[in-house]
Image (cartoon, rainbow, N blue to C red):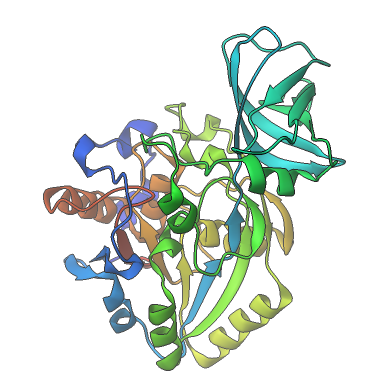
Length: 362
């Protein structure tokens, strides 16, 4: 890859990461098969149009692919206040003691201490409810702390699995369906806790994973429980003023060892998705293998771990646009996005993907 010395000296603002996306390119449904989506190979200066199941041709024996094994919760719950007003909760975290931290959408917020009735699954007589305790993580926090209750005293994970809805992103306009329950989840999802899928990994099916294994590419996993903040655009023109949302992550010892082994044999670390990037670079930056991260990666960031990246196409003015620009070069990314729009690639969570290499350090 070509170095970009001018970018290292440039001060980027929010407007730099804006672009016009035709609405019809926002994917509302997944492709019929996971690996049948398109893949824009942006690893060199000239883009190449591929199909996702061609990914093994871009990998090398000895490479290590790192996947995020988080599992999406049925985190969206609907209900109503005692006054009859409708309410929607999007549960961001399970806190313990049947408490959760949630986003709340309602015309008028209920009083602290009041209980709202939540809609149970059809045929259920669970008497599901939520009692508001206050804000989270502090008295002025952006989220709300609730206690979830039902007749049997089930834990929040059980209640969400039984009564909740797939937390589709705000730009997907249909109600969640059986298709979404299957396809808005990776085939290797394991650790429950996300409210959004690690979407680059949605393209992998068992046949593709087997093909990757067969060619001598290693696989490892991290966990980052993706929060709803991933869909929020940056709002401050001065990027330094933006406050990133916080997400919980874990880098297991087996993955740390796999990375060390890959480095020793001269292989590449290939992150599947920006969530894997944020996890591994947080670990490298802090030395902490588990905890909360609010890492904000913008052009000029010094990547310590990742050599290549599989990623979907991201929203204008989003922190993820800034991350991929930091990784592959701002001008290169903007050219790839222009190519993708001209070629009618499908965008966002159910859309197509890109393969990127890290640019040389300037």
